[in-house]
Length: 115
View 1 (cartoon, rainbow, N blue to C red):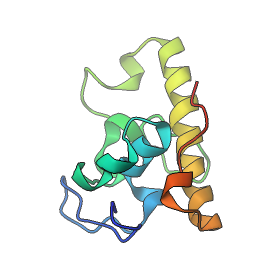
View 2 (view 1 turned 120 degrees about the vertical axis):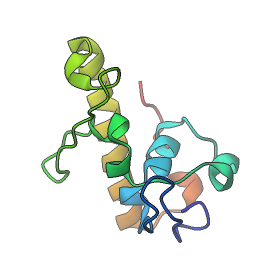
View 3 (view 1 turned 90 degrees about the horizontal axis):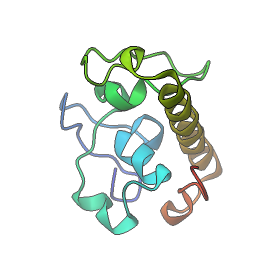
């Protein structure tokens, strides 16, 4: 996806990542964890192929994802941390849906603040 929202293959399942709304890379970009100039060099994957991140998206439009890794499973993490992660990841995912609908330029994707 790092090339003008065209998409790349998921480095976990190998299938095409269709758009930013299903992209773990762009979720991290929106959150500020990946810089714009790093997008072409970072691995791409579907959100559902990255349950360690997807499990924190809580929205009626997003089917819940469970993380089976005992060290990363949100059901084993402190409630305060889970609440904060859910807030940030859900907000970032909603932003991905918004930028796609609005047709914004990639440099306009990031949230102004994720804290």
